[in-house]
Length: 167
Image 1 (cartoon, rainbow, N blue to C red):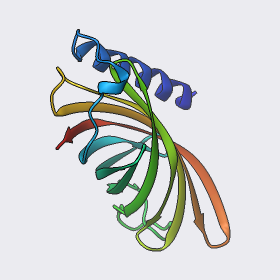
Image 2 (cartoon, rainbow, N blue to C red; image 1 turned 60 degrees about the vertical axis):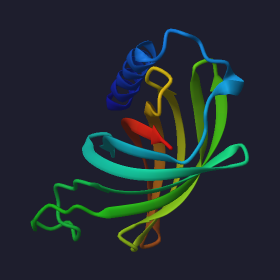
Image 3 (spheres, one colour; image 1 turned 180 degrees about the horizontal axis):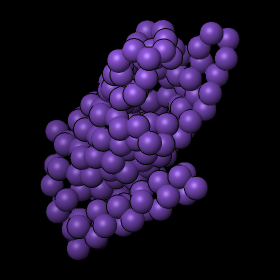
Image 4 (cartoon, rainbow, N blue to C red; image 1 turned 30 degrees about the vertical axis):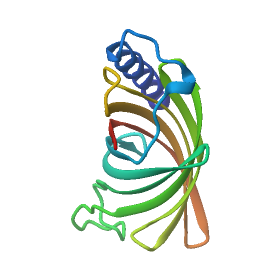
């Protein structure tokens, strides 16, 4: 039920952000690309808040995006009754672009780590656009991340909403 609610919220926010963008349609071939800074907030594990900062660079038709961020864990790293933790994650994504009118759909795989101790693999799909055809933009994306630790793994969804600035 929470996943459905997250998807519906993402769809509503994406629609609202798209409505805020320029009323003059931009051709798919005219969508600008360049080095872009991404700042996001969102959820990891469906309910936990996360903050992230990323930089992407176009390489051919793919954007290579490096990200760092943190997520709030209300339990201690060892699972005991210790203080809450803020693990740091770092990842690299290969985002394939699919321009659609005045927005860009993107999707791709990624690889990373959480605090250097947990391997993570992820799949990302999202939509991004610009406010009034300027350098400032918006994005909404969904993630599935698989966390591999101590011979086991778990795959969990996440949702990120944020702003971009293209140089």
